[in-house]
Length: 246
Ligand SMILES: [Zn+2]
Image (tube, rainbow, N blue to C red; front, side):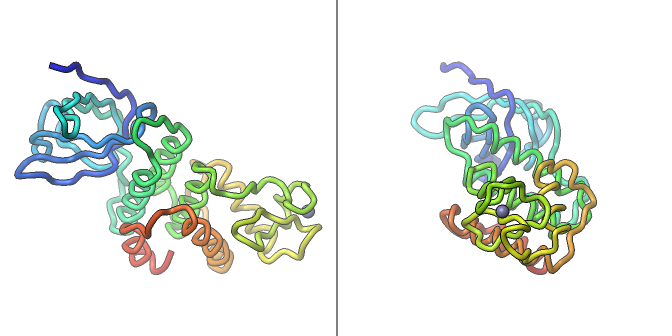
């Protein structure tokens, strides 16, 4: 019998029912990358899984190589739940969207600490912020940053100077322009606020951004996401509906 493999820091991204009581679990492990594993009787409460396997759990997992097919999940010990504590529909939609983004971007057998940390911070954002539209925008921009798909925002692409004050973002695929090089298309304060929030997602609790500024930034994020995602995400349509347009 093959030995168990220990995964020390994994997130549960997807749970797909299989047969009567089983689950196919998609895990994203900080070191081992994305792993699909078969959890026998995973839909029932079990000591092996510390109760019931649930989405957005973070914990230590054990998997065992199967013969031919998927590896088996033999144990899961939860260290924390990153599910929204306020269980309302828009928050669940945002958390599911984050999980799908992570599942699309994570690769099997590939460690990706930046993406893993992004997923953890982004899931925490579902709980902490009041304005979910801003949370969704920050989720998208920070996701793009984690996978290397966001232009450099710290310096002006024209003069190389700092962009924090008076910055504008004329074209999604190019960087920011400072207030000396172009007339800002957004007010200084809004872009400055966004850049500060992006620097530290956990501090984005309870912040708001004026709707007009959010809409302009949203079009930039959408353009960049369309370039990097292989297909439209199912959870995104649900999120858009729940938030009345993201
Ligand atoms: Zn400049």
